[in-house]
Length: 240
Ligand code: MN
Image (cartoon, rainbow, N blue to C red):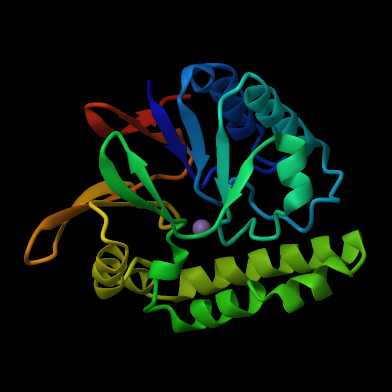
């Protein structure tokens, strides 16, 4: 049996081809999986579980159908869909995970994360992250009318694009020390995350041992998946 990991699909109605690939993935190989882990940024943005967006409704339905077949589905928040809540979990059958989350896979100790918390060089982003993850801030947002929340999310997305274009690329990658500290703190052999859209497998030298950092890719041009079974993890591209 294989455990599947995906992240950074950035689903939205403007990119229906990603949604179609996600649905066929859920109806296809995911049905035979031991479990499916979605490590954040499944959606381009999420303004609240009460958003009636029909594209999102289709995606939720496909997730529900997978969960109903008995495949455990886990969801971790990304920096775009951190407002996903318990109603979404109930609707889709997905179990919400904290970030980071340690798991054991086929005898290997693994730490799962979205990855944005590791980008400590980007202090501006980390300040924003702290603010938006505050339960009081989220309650204040949820109290706003849906239309206003959507307008705020659109504005935030545009600002983030402008910011990302203006900032040095290196600042937006993970910080090496943060990676080492996180792996040591949780005493794992593998750190598996997404967020940076820089898929790859990296060896991390901890001096006393070598750990691994596996980075999932985004789904803009094609799917990206980690398939993990008794032979270990494989980071692979899923052509459209
Ligand atoms: Mn992200």
